[in-house]
Image 1: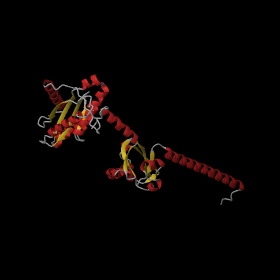
Image 2 (image 1 turned 30 degrees about the vertical axis):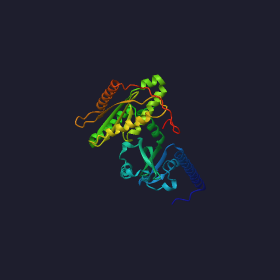
Image 3 (image 1 turned 120 degrees about the horizontal axis):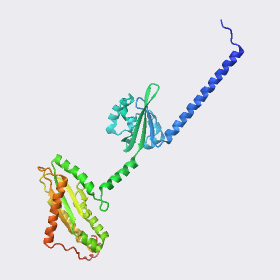
Length: 341
């Protein structure tokens, strides 16, 4: 039978316990410092860093998540992360979540994915999302890194608009028109609609520039763009494809022959513009029109070439008839009326 420990042995044991307690306190302090550091990172990060448990419930919801999604921390802790997913992908998300938690779809981990999230069920916000899978003990957790890219998307949209738009008139430029016209033509082929193409050239632009200067010529182009917008529907494509050349594409049910009505309306709009008082020039357009032939499967380039040739024939006919007087006698304004009416 072992004897009772001596005072020296008890003293050693107490010393060991004190050292162990000190180490434990130091480790706790380090853990607290790590936790404080982690919380500071979560709260100050540019991204919203959200942590989700193996049941798809939110367990970390920092301030950036509140700003991005509109839900407070108290509202979201313990709630399913699917609440911030748009309704159209919510079911798909819930199905995929378990696969991700099981380590499947590993190719997507760490990759940046562009998607959208909901702001308090009110509107969608474009975001860049990255997901990582970690384990706490034997339980998996997901960490979502979400970054608002609204500003970037708006900038990209502006750049895209600039790349396909004519800076002076606001119409599509050649690149924009050709890209969209090709899509419209293919859609018309599938839906069995007819396509009508109008090619117009501003006859007296050189005379306007030489006589009144290029700023006045620019105003004439802008005025022509407004006339075309007033004449055609919002769904029709209108472009400025050259210095003084315009093109319009419209689709309609077969055999409707709506271009007759449209051409009459265009002539009326031009006449109204030319009838305004104190004008320095007339708006004179040579026009060529062509319809898409479903039997020949014509391309948009071929349609434009055909309309371009018909436009030059119209220009030749007008010259042969002596319709080449580009001067415009200024009309006095009527009492009580603006020169622009």
